[in-house]
Length: 125
Image 1 (tube, helix red, strand yellow):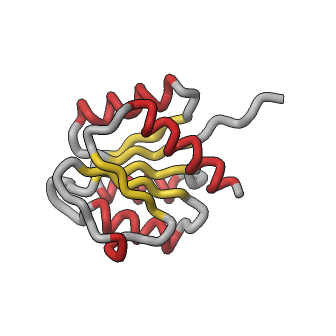
Image 2: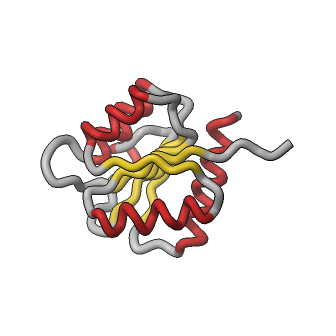
């Protein structure tokens, strides 16, 4: 029996980054959901079964940022593994939820794939 696909919600307000990340993870066998903002991410989370992993940028144009999204997801969907990425900001560990990992951009594609694989295994317990 084949393993169920890992589901990943990717949140980034830069369309090219969003699509490149989606392509990378889809090529690794992930089912990918996309959102360009905090509000869109919450809509996706409320509309479907929770993903295994959330990959979110920190900075969004307008609205709450990725740290606020990570906190909301950790509170409402504690089973979701959270990967926070940024090339501009490095938050203190106390700024984001305990079950979240921080990853700097630009990242090696293989490193992100590994983080998502491990996150999905953690989420499935």
